[in-house]
Length: 410
Image 1 (cartoon, rainbow, N blue to C red):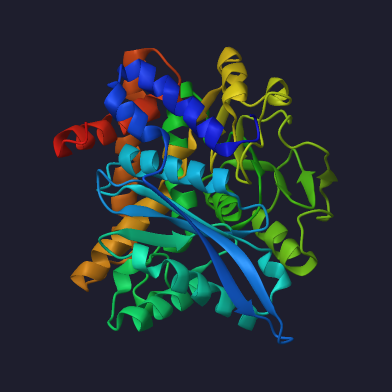
Image 2: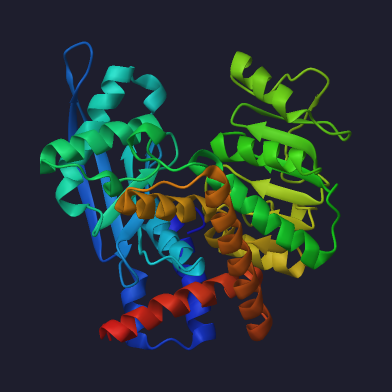
């Protein structure tokens, strides 16, 4: 079941369930989403023909607050993936102490194949299909893989047309002009940097440590830029079309310009092409691509001292065991990439107040949230003599379970 994302999510949960000695009546409820919606979205294409896309929305648990989670547009979206992502989002909001639950949505599509008009019609059509199940106090979507603020703007506009009123806080990750938050565009990466700094201090690495980043999309590119600014040495970068390295350190800004021109990091002047970024000798490895990148087949080849999971579910449970045996510290996705949902929550709060914070205020709140959450997860790791992943899971699952007890959901 290595490539079954939801099976992996359940395997991780079951370890935390045992560590917490969780009551069966609660555990059984946390092994499936509360609601799973599958929809057909008909879209009129530019040539006049009608194409029907399949979309999903998984609402995993709302004991701590409204469901919260992104919408991804990707050709490999499937039911198992959406369920897994909604479970991980449930733990993610809990581990950083947000009064939210977990959800996730997606549409099976390659957006690169659509014109802008087709993409807008698909975005609005998806909201038409799910709008009765979302809302500021019900379920709050956000951007994810291959969706962005522009798409969130279309979705917000469609929702407001359907309900007949302004409702900015129904969707986060919006453009600033319609209620978005400062720093939201790079908040996932910034949150991961705050967590990385804490982890580096714990295991005795230096600020100039070497870093390899798998995935040079939005989060990965921002992560590279922020770490380079802090003095870390970015020695390798990759995207779907290739991987490059330079042991002396890559100029991240120039790599970004090269990718903008050519469509890939591959072929960056002065760099060396490499086959496998994951097995590279580096102090820090940041998987920032899709699920299951590090698995049973390649985990034994990892030579990093620290892994920061910027992607969702990049390490399978089988790989986790191997990495733990190799004494590699893995800061899990539910903590490492929670900066995005933290600032999404801040965006909701600002929308509700109709009062907006400066970038510095948002970053100060984010830094406090991420560093406190790291310390709390580390304390659980030490208490249970377990991995950092399970420290974070025990913290998160324990908080969700307590909310369920307090609501009488037992």
